[in-house]
Length: 439
Image (cartoon, rainbow, N blue to C red; front, side, top):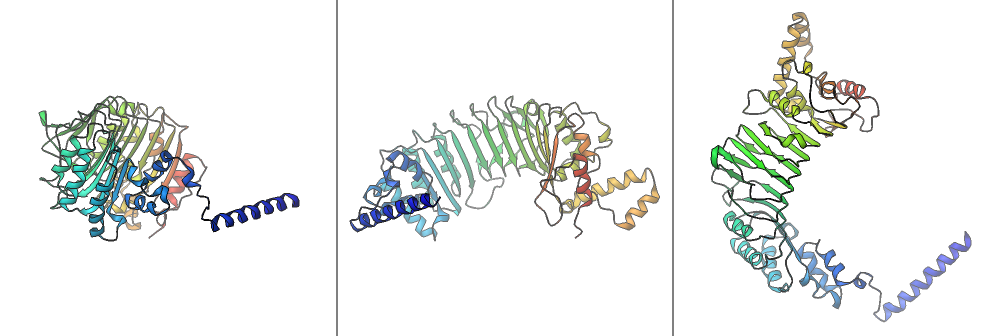
């Protein structure tokens, strides 16, 4: 052992001496610069343009390398002032090697962007869109100009847009998504703060032109003058719907390949079609279910269509809404037969006062049917619904009793649970019901 240590120390001293000699002659090794240009450009493509340009001071080898990067990441947050950002953008667009194809552009400005700067960037995109595959834009500006640019990029495979009008956020005259947009190569689409307009038969079908779509994210969007949102795609695998404002009756899914469906919202529309039958991972977090008289019944209809789901993630508030269905626990489910795991995300019921009161009233009604005396006792004691409705877990697992249950929460100050609890499903739920920190 001592000999190995001595040999290692000797080698280190020799290396240090050689480096000292090279340093004196200005020949110190630069291991990064020994990589070929292709690898260096790949590394630089992950950097914001500001930092990529700064590498020009490293050595002669790096002086013009940044001009050859096939991606442009322009984030105003990387600059101390908007004025600096506005000066930087025209310079980099002018100095970049125009013979190099542009493969990706990521433009992010938290707030309003100067019209001349936006126009300069979009003009550059239009003149370099032949090989542009990835486009991300997040800002407040002229959405018509942006959408015209997008429609010219026929090679796009990935598109992410979050666009606000200069006057404010999305409203009835806000950022409207085109009724027809042809992007034949598009596989990934992420939209935020858009309005989908009504087409034929009181139906909004904004995505029918994307024949290769694999992943779709709809975030904080809305629909006007339509009763139905229709999503038809034979290739769609992942669908995420988050905090949308949908004043609609139903969502029609014709998505035979849909595998993962994530739904987080306060609206609970009916889902029809064949979409849910193919889903294997289902993530659902809903609150009271505004603008619907019987949201629990709608949720129950969702569950009945989950024939092939293997992984279910569901919030405790969603379970509370589901528990409002009369005689729910007596229902024999024809679905959830292939369930392998279920995660319950605990959320404070008190955060939704309307739902809290509704669940509490329903509990009192059920108890009153058996004993009014017990109702008065519970009212005096301060009745508080359990975080997970009694019997709901067993109801969901009736066709998959061996499925593993995981109970998690983002509110450790309210709930006391062990994330690595290896006890049985019933014991986990029982512990959860009793281990609530009193405020």
